[in-house]
Each structure stands twice: as structure tokens, then as C-alpha cells.
Amino acid sequence: EGAKKRMEDALAIEPRHTTAHFNLGSLLASEGAAAEAIPHLQAVIGEAAHDAEAQLLLAQALVATGDDEASLTHFEQVAKLDPSNEDAVIGGAAALVRLQRYSRARPVLEAGLERMPSSGRIAFALARLLAACPDTTVRDGERALELAELVYAVDPSHRHAQTVAAV
Image 1 (tube, rainbow, N blue to C red):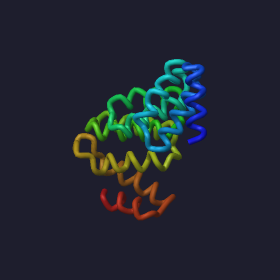
Image 2 (cartoon, rainbow, N blue to C red):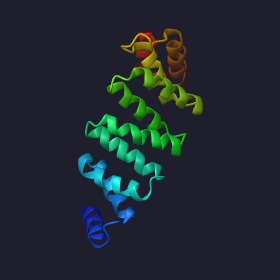
Image 3 (tube, rainbow, N blue to C red):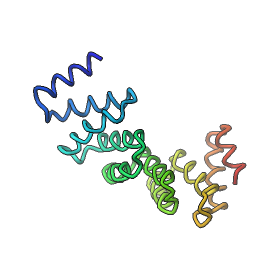
């Protein structure tokens, strides 16, 4: 609460203080107050659109408020600014899945896996999409099994075993 108050005080003195907006937005988002965090993160991006961390926090806050559509722009921007950001790939693809844009989610995950071939998180997400997508034109059981087995070999968890079994 003390940190939040100090940042609010700083913004009362200097309303365009990017660092105060970022810190307050980050703090609010971490407390579950995504709707309150959004204007602060938007203020950061208004001054520093190249700030991948602010873009990602804004995308995640938008998702938390149920605005998957608006989050997509920011997830895409993070992926451009930081091509090795797993959270941008996973978050963007998950938003597309929730929006039932499965045929757009697949290339996001495939491109992410191509950039980060050792990412178990992306491989797992792609395997699940390819195995169980409601849109049968997106499915690819053979590729899903290959990915699911690779992920399971590295981390033989119950969750990963379920994906192998689902294929």
C-alpha cells in the first residue's frame, strides 16, 4: 500500500512519469486489479511503445478483464519486440483460441516453436491444439503425438501424459 501511495503521489506531481505509471500498473496487475492497471500501462505505451514488458503486462491485464480481442495487438507487438518471449506466443495463441480463431492460433504457435525450438511450453500448447482443436482442419494427430511425446520425455507429468493419451 505504501508503494502504491508513493506512485500515486508521484503521478499527482508529474502525470506523465512513465516509470511511476509502469510500476503502479505492474503493482495493480499483480494485485488482481487489472482494470485499474490498464490506463497506467497504456500511458507507458503511449510514451514508450517499444517497451516489451509494458506491452506484455497490458496484454495480460486485458485478458484478465476479458478483452482478448484488444490483447492480441499487444501480444503481437511483444513478439515483434522480443521474438524469444514465450509468454507473448502462449498468451497470443490462448487469446486466439478463446476467440475461436484456431486457424490463426496454429501459425502463432508454430512460428514461436520455430524461433524457440526448446520451448516445452510452446510445444505443449501446439500439441494440445493439434490434438484436440474443435476445428478439425487445424488438427494434425501425427504432429501432435510427436510433440506430446517430446514434451513428456522431458517432463513426465500427469498433464503431459494426458496430452499423449489424448492423441
